[in-house]
Length: 214
Length: 257
Image (spheres, rainbow over the protein chains, first blue to last red):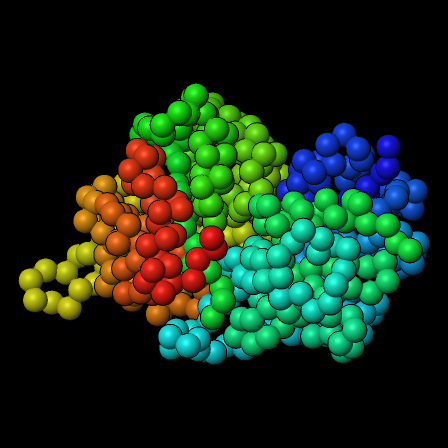
């Protein structure tokens, strides 16, 4: 049975991610919510979830020493980042007065602009909360059986600006057009929450469990 | 704008059972929160809200188990409210699998509780529930106050000022219920909804008074709500969430179909 490590670095609500993975794993994979270096390094796949503020997230990650583990895992096995698990991969974030990220994907994290109006003249509220369209930018095994433009669940006030177009797996429109998923080598990372996105989300998680890196 | 407006069925749960009689056709156990939540999930609900109305604190643990059960089978956002008083109450519900926690009376007793909760768990999971009632008379411009205890106790707090204060404290969303309309089936208090929605920069869920699907449309278009919450029109099988979305879509509202 293959092992899936869900990184537990003490800040986020990991239960939702673990439950959704268990649901799609149907006995084929062991889902471990863990902060143990050895378990993470021995796992076949790694999921890096995150919620809340990026400053606290990066601090917990560094305090627990899991930042080095993340750097190691992204080169050796399929790696799925979710929400802050995406934002932490970037170089810097404007949140919490400026936070240094892991610097794995070139680019930064910025806040949605205030007082942007939509076509009805209504202000785009922040956080960006709800089901929005995810427009795929390039083919990827994780998009298998997922319609281009399918809706996923978002909840965030900051978004990623990836520097290199080839790292952008999906874009979404809200107040601006922003990067809603990145893909680079073993890494796939989403701003949206697949674990809360019903059929489309569960399909993406299943695709992750089946993703064979060539 | 491609962000969909959300439809949120709300379930009242007492000692682990759905109350106020859910009457779906062909449902085995209409009192089972898991089965009811699954039904709404299948209908395309965008989120589900559970309101714990359990009076005795002995039964509080039951809600944690309900949330655990639902969260292992239903993969859309779940909000839990009712009787949340401490950071530990929030933590337990999040660990059980809730995504958002709705705070009402505890915020009125201590507004900074919302700030503490938001700092600790993130604004994305803190919803402030506001129960408001119109207190102006005659030809005065309408104004609304916050009420507690199901609309019985006045607090003297202005609803719009309160919503702004809760946003500043770090609320990620507001669940706004008109106590004048709740249970009437006369539709949302659209003026109230719009006033609050335009006063804050966080999403507002309209609640209280839905009697037909057109009321949901009005809540979004006239009330400027980001999401609409309803209980009885869905519980009694009068309308499905799909039907609600179809009507909203016909009126040009973006919905997740």
